[in-house]
Image (cartoon, rainbow, N blue to C red; front, side):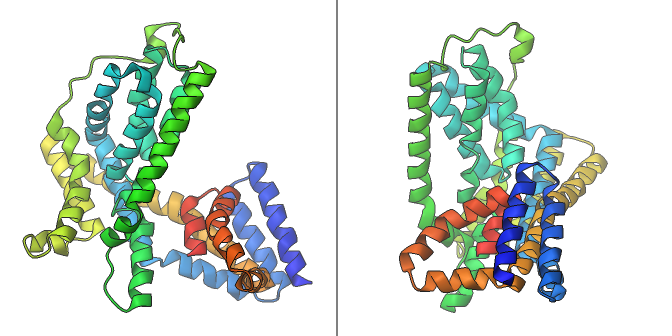
Length: 355
């Protein structure tokens, strides 16, 4: 009976999300209702405690967001965006897929979909519109590339999977090794997405012919790129990669963790751009808080929701069903995180729950 109640609450949670109620509130209330119905509210509260203490994820997510806030404050993200977007002016046919590829590459350096969209969108979307691309297509081109952080050592999930693999294999597995396993798949996926964007552009005709009402609409303006500033957002990732690839030659870099490189990158950015260090410090810690409140917050709420599902026995029933059918388990591993991300509004939370 409890399993059916859990299924009912799952459906009700989806409805709440579709109706655009505050996602964290919906997840917490749903989890508590299931925990109380199962007479095991501690399962939900324990989920909250575990969610709040996800060490590797907190370190990665919060430090990356802190770095992103400092890059926004110093303007280094704009210099990077303009630098990589500049070649798009010379490849008219591949404007839209090119924008997708550029977004993908920038997000490797700035592993935050929201931060990357804001930085690259402010540059690429006006550029595409000024060259005749419809605004909706320009926005879609940027959105389609917001998963480049799959190749970033700063992505919390690469670190988390490395930790799981290290425990399972009883050997030290680093985030760089995890990335190595899915690098080819990520680039194949990017090629497929970019090709699809090109085909859609040609079929719909939205890649040309759009006439902005005014220059103000496109917001196109001359921007002098400082290429040193453009390199600063890449430095933390470069340090992590070099340290992992050449541990003997670069022992100092090999000892650095994600949070260390993000802090050092933020310091370099503030010094290089000669910004107010006091305000830079405030931006760094504002980013830390934003990372915990906005990203970890949804992960904590999702952990409580998952705790409620476990209390009703719904998850155990699903696992038992999948054990008897390996094909179903493989399919669920791919579709499950996506479906849960749709429900809870966070890819981070969904991946965390399934991992």
